[in-house]
Length: 446
Image (cartoon, rainbow, N blue to C red; front, top):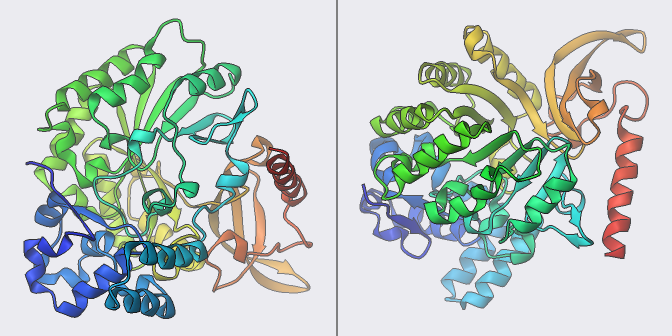
């Protein structure tokens, strides 16, 4: 299959859209001028049920929905489009809306960007001691865009909101100085959007036997298996990629695909099954992850089925995330209590080989906070519900795997909505505040 992509400027040429009303097409155009919209022919032809597209999870995963914008913002952008406003005028309106959508949550811009030789490395995030995120500039797009994407700011033309780094020299220099880093995660966007020749240039320094880093695992964060499995089957450089993956493994470096699958329907095509088989044959692992997303996958039976199928195909269920506090969060987020219930109900349906999955996890400012459950405890002379939490990862490794408690709140949707069950602060708050203050002072002196 030859790749073909559709975006706001040409989406009305998609043949299947003849089923849509003019109003539905306008809604897509309005939202697509604010939030990123891109879909390809594989998603359109093989994943979406066009006989039931309004309720189809993959349609909602890829095509913007009117409710993703608040009513006033939707009206503002529609009025501008109806008035045939210029591109510059439309961008100003779109950017004003985008700035209200928390484009970089969890302190990414302020706290995660390290320095090397006195220079900020804008294409790197180093939040957790052992793991470094690398944003290669050539990988800052995707085969299709997920409507819920928490990195949507990478794709909307607001350059000041992007993470990207063109050269690997500074990356390797930083890693040589930071021997605590054992894992480098290539992310974006999607690194698997790159051609083989470009991607190879980023990988070769790690295969040099004289490199002085302590990298033991290369991770590739990708949606390619769900959105364009032909990348590894029939694309002209598919075999080159597979050969490189094998070289990585044979060099002694663990290669882990962090594959994003948001719904069981993405696992049903012959193409995705063949791509998974070919990647695993190189010796690479495939670990799977997804947020729990209202209107797309907020169903425990589906999650259980998806985890079982992933294991059957040789993949490792890894994370269920809580939808992040960014973008169209009001459309996608699920209360924490409901999220945990869905996870628990799915988890109890599967065998131990599927229970490698962790979650629900919030990737928030202090770290990856896992919801362990809701429990009644004696508090203030009576039995009260509390959230039981712990960190899977933390800005300080000492915070990891320490249970703590938050007051029960049935409306809470994110860590910032929670308050300590005991006292007036969580055990990590003082140290976290000090880290935030330090990051602020560093930014002022830069």
